[in-house]
Image (tube, rainbow, N blue to C red; front, side, top):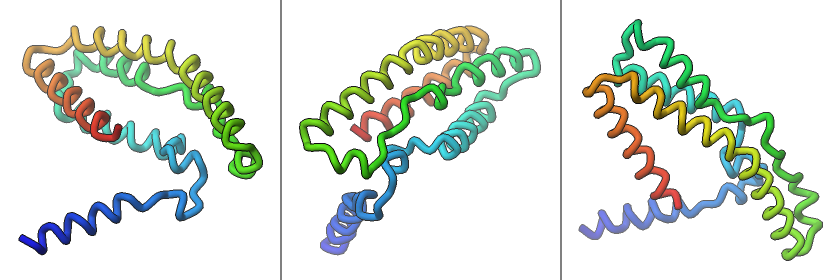
Length: 149
């Protein structure tokens, strides 16, 4: 039992390791590497397609759905340069990050609204078993996201 707690403690310490310790860029810290994001998204979509058993007649709806799911990475404001951020005072840095966050939200809102509608449209093309699978996958995704907060 003590060994189990020791293992948990070691795992917690490993999880508390900050990417900043490795001098990662802000983009890497926030996992905003567009190429990495695209690979992860494609993997997730391929797994979802496999689990849903998309039929040939559903392929056009699947294509429209996956197209709508691609975020507008190029349109997002770039992360500030680390050296630039280090020159700022804490209040200036906070204001800069707030400005970037607002720009990000303004850019992403129309995409997110479009994506939500695409999911609903795609959902309506699924049979009952596929809907159940998609419901479970979406609930799983939400649980993962809530644990990250």
